[in-house]
Amino acid sequence: MPYRTPAEMPEEEEPEMSDTLRIWKMVLITGVSGLALILAYNVFSTLHADQTAILKAQIESTPTAAQAAQARYLEAKALSDRAMFEQMTKAAEKK
Image 1 (cartoon, rainbow, N blue to C red):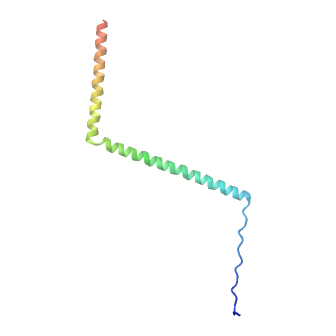
Image 2 (cartoon, one colour; image 1 turned 180 degrees about the horizontal axis):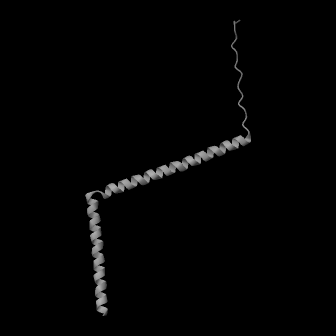
Image 3 (tube, one colour; image 1 turned 30 degrees about the horizontal axis):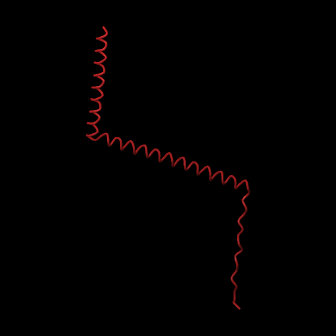
């Protein structure tokens, strides 16, 4: 016969949560989860927009892009001038 027998620890019973407390806990968890999702979306959206703006600025700052922009400007100006001269010619023919 052993000198001592090990003592058994009494099992702690977890107190039951009331229904009201359980409902408020779920509401709080749902609200915090919703706010976390909204915040995560806003952060992602901002980062994506900033990254897109930086990429666009990098592309537009290259010499090739500057030449292409100048070529588009000159083409648009030539078309505008041509339309203006055609309009002037039609107006002169009507007189």
